[in-house]
Length: 552
Ligand code: TEU
Image (tube, rainbow, N blue to C red):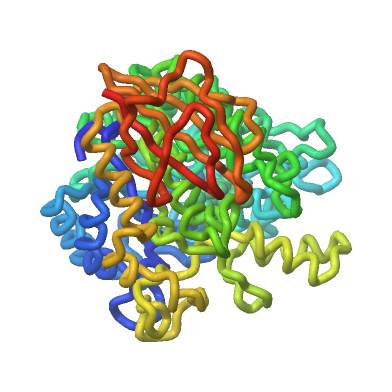
């Protein structure tokens, strides 16, 4: 803990982490039970996805009470114990604040529906168009209209996500006060950080039709007119009162210019941001329900562009490949087969060498792969289930839809953590809420912990290196060979330390020539994914070969 630039955050999707009571769902005690494992990995913070009272329509991102723990995950005592036990190991707990919307089961929404004026103004209730249609043509991110009609009120309410996730009206100062109180409540229980869900969508702007025929309305509410003002207020009135608190905002379709403010050193908003542009390189525009090859040139230019831009403005990135909304990176950009191990390590090195705070998503550190589901009844995610129907309605045949879900479904990242090679991968003694990947017999934490060549050992080493060499935290960022068709290479410098991170992103061998003026001789190999590495100015990199070099 401490300086977030030196820290590594580990994300826990509690539902799928470790189940201690045999109900097939991971729980808070499950997190406590695995603290020694996390300590061994060396991470500083645990970001826990929402475990608050919720009908679980969207895996807990539909919160019905921000101050209560859903019995599915345990009790407040379990939570207090987790905070204390993590603290004893120097690990801080970060909570996930879903403040753009609440569940329609939340008391505020229920009272709004019951006709209480005060609470109606907590949300966006609007009259329909003269023809009775929705107030605007905005689309929900989970498919369909972003407006739901409430017959008893004769009005629509806004939901940018599922129709059970009603958007909160941040224009209302009462709402903002309530949310600050929630943050302070958890600070009082020893929490050390917060992740704010889709926090760049909180200021809605004008309710007008999107003029773009392919538009979904995001131009009106993404990085909206008052978002910076709202964030500064939240900072001032809650977490900013404790300088130790670390914050990260999840930014949906944001712009870099806005991130200079969200995560600027002195802008009084957040410590850092997640942006997702580099994870849309296998989409067509914003459309993810397609199968297209990864645009490597674009991936690299986005990563490099954000690294340079944020560094120049003294703003801070969260750097990551994986979370509970993304497919597994080794399946996505690496290799599930022969080079599974090499590619998982290479992908890790690319991220951990960058300027920013690295996030490891549960199971990434053991190279977990996509779910491999082939039937609809294996899926659980509301977005995937909605899109199954939407894509079928668009005329795609079943097989094509299954192929798309197999690549892009959020459930790919939500199968249970594979702890050992036994039943259910050691996740639960009961019936898991979502199927465990059958490759848990081969890919699991238990075997990797005792293998110095494992993916786990590689991640542990990356975390250690960050603590040992300041260049990881404080170094500048300089792209190398940006035009190379197969290699991601960059250099970082700080206080007499020079770090090179050189990675073959592909399965085929490739030749990499060191740019003029760079000298690799005299460099030490800090870490690599092949047993013997020979840095050279004309270097033939083996499949997925990766090396981190240091000169000091
Ligand atoms: O996600 C926000 C978000 O926009 C996505 O990553 C979304 O899942 C993706 O665009 C769908 O294609 C956050 C949470 O991480 C996600 O789990 C929630 O479902 C969502 O907000 C709503 O709270």
